[in-house]
Length: 232
Image 1 (tube, rainbow, N blue to C red):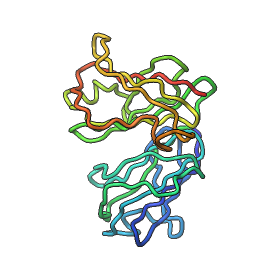
Image 2: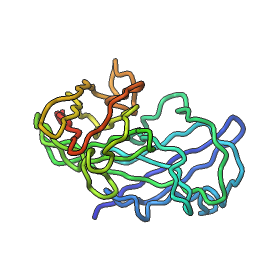
Image 3: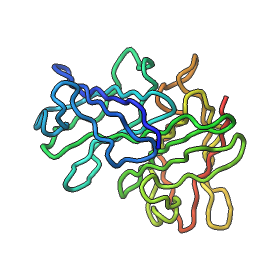
């Protein structure tokens, strides 16, 4: 398995800390960020500290991150990252939080796929919480299912009966998201969302190929999330 150097700066208006890792691609397990100076985890280093912004970076491809309670496994905050050196001139805001002593920050990077393929990540927000879906390589112009990053279940198998409220998608550097399509158990299209290319002139975001909020889509058994992309 491949690895890459990743980092996240977490802060508030009066302080910030850098957490680094040599993260294994395509997994959450073991990819825990440690303070660049003390080598301590988030909750041990700054328990009870307020956090309100972040800047996260990977080396190549794409990457999700999360702050998680190591005991309860609750995901407290989640987000995406940018290629090193391409952060915005202003930090990315997140909902303010107070660090629990059990909190850790961890990473899920994917390397850039082979030519004519694109790595993809999607945070899916439902009334049951937020889940990461992924694909290590989507062939150009070929509708491809995303599966859970944790157990490789499809959208409908994992989230049957929940209501989708928000979706955020990140492709590898340079890739274009043509569409994200929600397909029911009979193959019928229930919703189509068009995407874009991130991190270029005219792009709305360095983080997202697609960010759609305010949705209300009831997910059925056997449903799938299919992405169509191009790698250049």
